[in-house]
Image 1 (cartoon, rainbow, N blue to C red):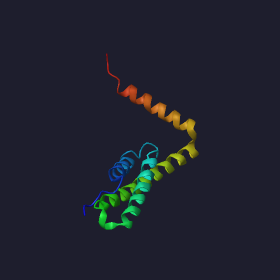
Image 2: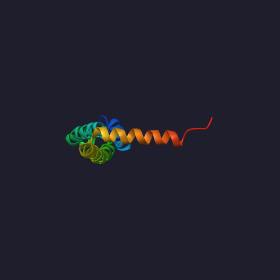
Image 3: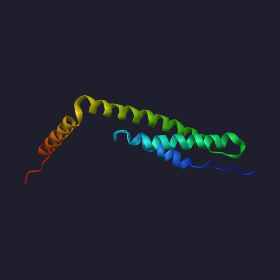
Length: 112
């Protein structure tokens, strides 16, 4: 009997890795991590019904662990973002960003 691949194994891994690499975007890649975790759990249930029929369960487990790490990273960044906005407010945060942006433009401008 030929062993089959579990469904979505590549997608699980790619989404989990994306959530870990893109976590600095304000926690929005938490969607990737959650989706990856959900698909991994679904694939694990399929695997548990017939373990002898599938051969890529280790990739699913690896993707699930990376998805959990992505969830934690994104929750931390999302919490920091919410805390920062709650303490200093959006206006102060925007003004500081614009000030630093303008400083960077002045410091890195080329002489003509």
